[in-house]
Length: 229
Image 1: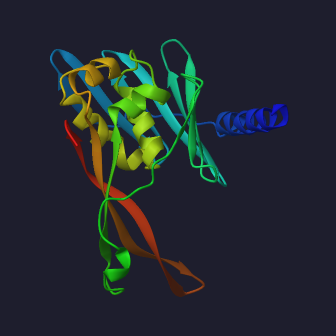
Image 2 (image 1 turned 90 degrees about the vertical axis):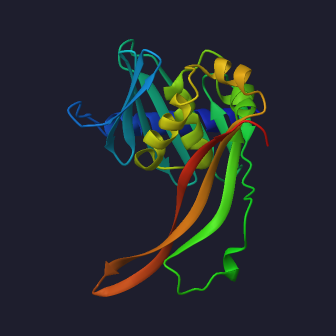
């Protein structure tokens, strides 16, 4: 048991150190998406594929992701206080660990939809189905009731393994539309609610030595809130 915990700790340290050495220098001049909840101003600034800044009432949170083989880590750094938390996703175990709660949850990879094998191989885009996560799942393991939209968005991105640049603004936009700003308030208002996303695969290619190599890349669209399953 001690050996497993030690290995996990070393992996986390390696990822965090790699993140720091990477020298991410966000450009605060980047334009972003602005959302309003009552009198609260929420702004999303996408810096690059793996980092973004979410501002809530003047408090900025830098969300950054780094991948390392079968594990990835998403850090959430408060740029005003310097405090930092993280989520560690393990693809082999199918789990996510939260430094916020000290808990580990299992990832539900079930897809509500159709069999992609039934779609023509000549398609350039195909719908695979829908995935969902309950607010109760977030509240029960990854976050605290006081967690704001920045940490909620980071948790959802990590759960679905969505690149930060691809989904941050969409998720924050949907969450901000609920009219409340903390997970506890959202869960109280929608105890049986959650988020649903449509999962697609897009056919792409890359050039290598003058030849085209095709591959399928997964992407999420149409983020929606639901109140009852």
